[in-house]
Figure (cartoon, one colour):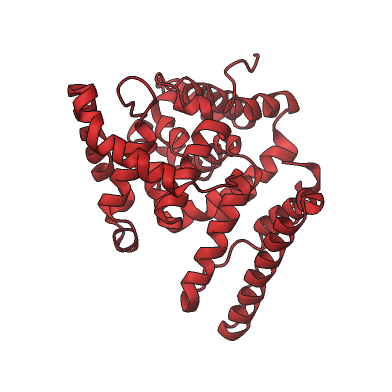
Amino acid sequence: INAEYMGLMVLRPSRSWAVLYMAQSALLAKYRNLIEQGNRSAATRANVLSQLRALVLLEGIPDLQEDADASGRVRAQLYMVFLGVSELKADDYIALNATVTQSRDHEAGASAAATNTLVLDGAARTSFTYESRFRERVSDAAWARVLKCLCARPRGPPSYVQGLNVVSGAMLYVLPELEAFHAVRRLVEVHCPTYGLPNLDGARLGCRLLDEALQVVDPNLFEALHARHLTAEVYALPSILTLCACTPPLDQVIHLWDFLFAFGVHLNVLCVLAQLLLNRPALLASLRPETALRTFPPFLADSVISIVLHLSDKLLPRELLARIEKHTTTLDVGS
């Protein structure tokens, strides 16, 4: 996180319903104006991006229950901006869907069938499928299409990467199908390509960096977990792989993603660390912390973000932060 954002805490005062509605409507309008300004002029784009990031951090992206479509459109636009999705190729997506549907099974045989099974089974196991809002907004058919297209490769059988079902499902909750496909593909190919490696090398590296960070900020908790052979790879790999989307509730996952996409998905490592620190008393008091770590408890995004800012600003050495920043795009982060 750049120095201009250091020390900023997420403190949003309570307001009456009418005042809150007016303030949130004005905030959505401010987001829209900035996005339009950035689209009009390449010269101001960097400054606009900085302002959008500051707004996300200080004000958040409001969820207007009275006008959910307006909130959803602004969040969708911001995700496209932050992830750098500049072009939506509907024809290419339709053609890829047709190719996957009509010829993959014939060309790749059992391998394609196995991947399809993983896709559908993986979707069924995802925790937020039990949230009624998710089921209302995301159809199984769209989810399967996006996943199969993401798994498709120019040559050879399709390849399913663990965690992709969760990420694509949460993205479909925010974005229409076409936008979701391009956003997840951009995420995997540009922002965290190491997480998409078949052996999960990038995510495993993220776990090792999480262990290092925990040892720095809370050596007592680190030692208590390691005494029971609980390394981050044992308990945190799903959270690292899915950018925390495997932990409910989904609305808090989305607010956390607002922050991650604005400032960098590498901060996911610190988001998982923040969840550990929030759960510290229960972990230290537990006779079986491995059971407590099997499923992370629900979190509040604002609390996690505040801890991440403090970790970045005060507690972690620059050298470790630099390695965390690099790990999503290269495995060569030094030691």
